Image (cartoon, rainbow, N blue to C red; front, side, top):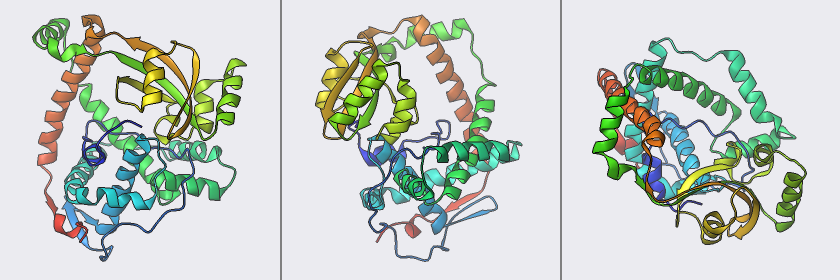
Length: 329
């Protein structure tokens, strides 16, 4: 739904801002043929330390990254979308090489994910589907070629996430530093009006009305969103879209978000379907108070310090990439 440039979104990820792997929440439409280079999947496209990365490895990661961008727009992924990102393949290889380097560092630091934890996560992902076929279809909608790919990504994210958190926790900043940063950077903490919204997206008005009745009877919004929302980008978050400014959403949704009642259920239609939405909060335009900004400042300073440390560690790993081998001719 958010109006973003897809290629820029694909390349905007950083090692210290790992996105949790999307768990399957919606069926995909029939997929078209993959838009991938007609090359040998075993072709070596990069080397990271002692690891050799093949074209097949890269294609699997690129497909998942593209799917996350598409899912963030509230659209199930299908292979035909890969053509939209073909021009970003060479640049994404740089990011992928870095991601693999960080993964190596995380494992070398002793981070692991318990097999039982992975089993539980996989069972939770599978539980919402009536059949293996439905689950496989939903995996396709979120960019995974198989359940094994989902499990591998859950493991990687768990290992890397623990490593990045451990780095960031090393850096702490006192009140004087935070206040000084705030006073020197007040323009950064001036915001425009924002609306914070959660929603459930369904295909028909009848389904939306049924959900409104369920909520009125005490239904749990987050659970209904996880079970029924056709927006893969927010369903796993209980329907939460976070906060956004005016003009970032499609017109009908934007109007409801900024002029509708707060903490009351609304229904609106857009080109994506019917939205059952609740505006949880609105933030007025102006300077964000120090008390509200302080946690964000501490997190930002810690992230920046951790990023510098991580950059230095990544630089110690020998890498080699061949972007011409991933370019679509």
